[in-house]
Length: 224
Ligand code: MD3
Ligand code: FE
Image (cartoon, rainbow, N blue to C red; front, side, top):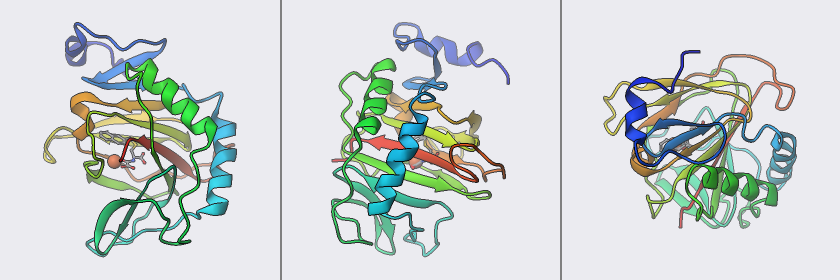
């Protein structure tokens, strides 16, 4: 692993380094908190199991007609969905026709503590998208633009198998950086990076004690 503190990213932080031990600046407004959620990971996985019992994982269809390789579900007041008619947030799970399950306390606790450690003390998520990757599943480069307020950050928590995250720029053509994310790593994406193009490279096969042959990613958002 090459050092990430030197060189071009350092000077972007001249006046306002993110607070918190182990906070690693990635770019302006983006902070990696390596292993921040490691202690909470077993409780997070248990809470995921309870959410999934009420709102099962499903492979959604994109507006272009492709079935996603990632299985998804949501919790919190709002959930992100896609189908042939587009991407949007809903208060009701289209599969069960019930409200999305409530945000578990341990989810909210990890998300707000991580946001605060990265300088976003006011963050209150109202949506959590749960992405489950199996080996070879991937997420192509995209922006997250369905939320109402881009001034709120997105907090992502990685659990289980490691992945290579693709962190691009403001334009789709900008060559993405490759960032390895491991179980317990948390990234807070705010400021100008909030609208950066990003994705996930095809997941390598493996086995993880917490999640088996899966990677699970939680993204906490202020959607409404
Ligand atoms: C950078 N999920 O659900 S999380 C997504 O690992 C998504 O499942 C990925 O992209 C995953 O939309 C990446 C990290 C992430 C999330 C949102 C971002 C990075 C971001 C928004 C702007 C910039
Ligand atoms: Fe995204």
